[in-house]
Length: 270
Image (cartoon, rainbow, N blue to C red):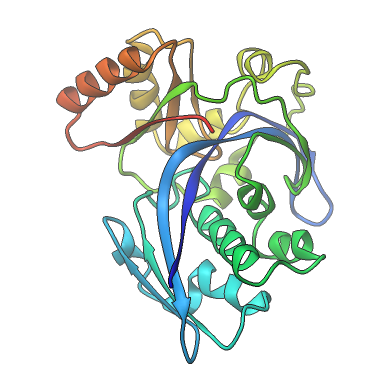
């Protein structure tokens, strides 16, 4: 029987960049949260490993060997081979951890099938800084490069959320390179709501400079008065959190009518 798993979209409720490290990475403090929808993976035993991408954004992943799902298969014991079908619903280079979420879902599939090795966090981190959090796919605090995880407050579980992307890819590397290097202070403590409201995304300013469409998305989201609207990760996707599903759906309908070319996903935090 095939196994199926959702690769939940990742958002950063807060993302504080504290400095550049000697190894070229950045020291971060972030509160990861996950939406109850995303890409979809279906896996079944096969003679050898393979990954087939389909879905709205599947054509972007035209090199199977470069696909992070194939790379995850290579670092995990999972039997003779797996045939994986990836339904790519999340835009690529969008600040949603799409590839990392796909790898995280693959880790969970392996866990269900044969179990994960004890050093799985190290194997996940080698694939990408967001992958360990995406394996967990629950609200967690990330430090270091984002791979040092601690349990996060989950008081926002079930909160209605709307994701909007202008369909403009924005690579992570140039955004971090454009960060001005100023440490604006530590991420606050408290509930997830407290951290979200009092925190910030230090990559928003450099992302706006590289991709002005981020400002257009934030403007549209804030027009409907959510209790929070912010860019996720390195962009260009932005999210808004609402007091009710009805408020979220009204905003989604208005934005879809005003900006029919934009991508959006309505859901709730896990």
